[in-house]
Structures are given as structure tokens and as C-alpha cells.
Image 1 (cartoon, each protein chain N blue to C red):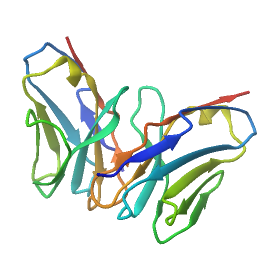
Image 2 (cartoon, rainbow over the protein chains, first blue to last red):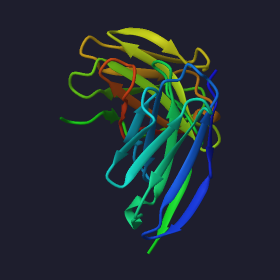
Image 3 (cartoon, rainbow over the protein chains, first blue to last red):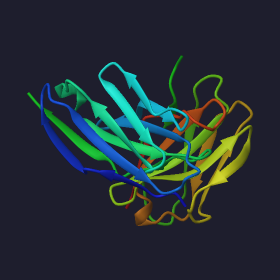
Amino acid sequence: GENVEQHPSTLSVQEGDSAVIKCTYSDSASNYFPWYKQELGKGPQLIIDIRSNVGEKKDQRIAVTLNKTAKHFSLHITETQPEDSAVYFCAASSGYALNFGKGTSLLVTP
Amino acid sequence: KAGVTQTPRYLIKTRGQQVTLSCSPISGHRSVSWYQQTPGQGLQFLFEYFSETQRNKGNFPGRFSGRQFSNSRSEMNVSTLELGDSALYLCASSNRGEGTQYFGPGTRLTVL
């Protein structure tokens, strides 16, 4: 089955800096790659997603890049703010099930 | 549109009991997926329903089951509860199942 690895597991940045989270996947059939943000006591919230026919996608301060050949994709958050502090999950899917990475706990300090 | 709703939000059960969790998807969405979230295993796929049919199933024992009703609402059932079933159970809805899934707040199940 699909195996998704996510790094780093924890990330601490200063407000205004950029944060980068990287994921690799194993199943070449995967064609959909979403990123979720989960705050304490809440369910995961979709923040951005990308499909395999696109190499990069941007939404304001958030961007995702995909390298299908190398089977890795990354989340980039620029100009980080304290409210960006949360756990971020990457996922990969070739159909109905999302296969998640283990998560990255991001702390943005003022 | 209202988001995905899950009830109850918290549950405490004892070993050997069974439990039923409920999920109402976003209006118009016909696919409902269930996931288990634990600190050790992370987020794991349980099963997915579309138009009252289970289309996909994860690697969980038969004690975990589910169903979907004609109005797309879904329930999952766990029988003969074990301590290891303590987890956050998340429901996600999608228009067709493939692609974008929107999660509810989850049901926190504690098994004593």
C-alpha cells in the first residue's frame, strides 16, 4: 500500500519567517496530494491541494510543489504568523482513501 | 453551507461494549469516509461509502463496520471495544469520493 513520509516532525520558526514541510510517497499511482491543518480539539482543515498534472500551486501565503518523478511534494508557508501554529498533515491518494503522513507540529513564535 | 457534523463529540465506554458514531456530510455530498486518529498510528483510513455502498475498506478488523443511509448520513459501529480503540474518529465528506475531502470535528472515544 501507499506509504507517506513527512519531515520534520516538529518545526519552530519566528514570526515572519518561512516554513517548509516535505513529504515523500511510494505509490506511483497517487495523483492527488492535499495538505491539512489541524488545531487542538478540531478536525483537519484542508488548506491547499494539488493534482499530479500540476507542478506548483499557490494560495496567498501558502504554496505546494510536486515532483512526480522523485515522488515528493512540499508545503511552503511564507510570512508566518502565530495563528499558523498547528499540526500540518500531508496526504497522498490514488482513489478514495487518503494516506496521511505522521504530521508536523509547527510553532510560530512572536 | 454547513460543514460536516459528528455526534456525539465525546464518548466514554468500557471494554467489551459497543458504540455507534454518527456523521452528517456537507449538503449535496454523497461520499463519506471514516478515519481513526491516534498518537501512535496517526490518521488511518477505515472505510468509504458512496450512495449507501461501501466502496473501499482499510486494514481494520471486522469489529469496525459502517453504513450509509439514503440521505448520505453515515454511522460507524465498533463492537467488543478494546482499550486500543481509544481514538479520535473523524468523518470526511466529498462530492464523489475521489479528491477533496472535508473533515468534521471528530468524536473522541475513550475506552476504559
